[in-house]
Amino acid sequence: GQQLNQSPQSMFIQEGEDVSMNCTSSSIFNTWLWYKQDPGEGPVLLIALYKAGELTSNGRLTAQFGITRKDSFLNISASIPSDVGIYFCAGQTYTNAGGTSYGKLTFGQGTILTVHP
Amino acid sequence: NAGVTQTPKFRVLKTGQSMTLLCAQDMNHEYMYWYRQDPGMGLRLIHYSVGEGTTAKGEVPDGYNVSRLKKQNFLLGLESAAPSQTSVYFCASSITGINNYGYTFGSGTRLTVV
Image (cartoon, rainbow over all chains, first blue to last red):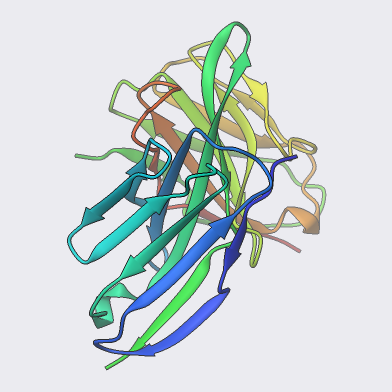
């Protein structure tokens, strides 16, 4: 099956530092998504990327859809304590379920981010 | 603005017991999903549904059953719980199946099987 390799597994940084994490795969994806999960909560969508080469920003977050469609990265600039959490990448491919097209998500293993004040 | 609501939030089962996890969404989404989250493994799809009355197997369906009798509800059942099913379970829903701007997740059910 499809697999995503997300790195690093964890990061410990000082407030104000920039953060970078990435996902790679041997498979091609149609869409790349980045989620954040706070403790005790479900993942929340941060950024969605739909075209190869696309670079998208959302406040201090910037993400890119790799040209080969097999990778994506997420950058967080000037980290703050509330950035703490688990960040997941997810790649979407289209499959068919009972005659209905469906976008299947494959998730990376997650990056645990700790920010020290 | 409830979104996706999961019940219960926590549960402890003995091996062999059965239970049903309930997921309810109030956004009129067609698609619903059940995932399990284990440390270091991300989220893995158990079962999903592309509409009322339909269900399909995901990546790790063994030991689970699902039903989607009503559009807003997606039930996940464990007929005979095993310690390997100790996990955090997340339900999600989406408007459509393609370019759906991501899923909306519930806050999870933490299940421990002893």
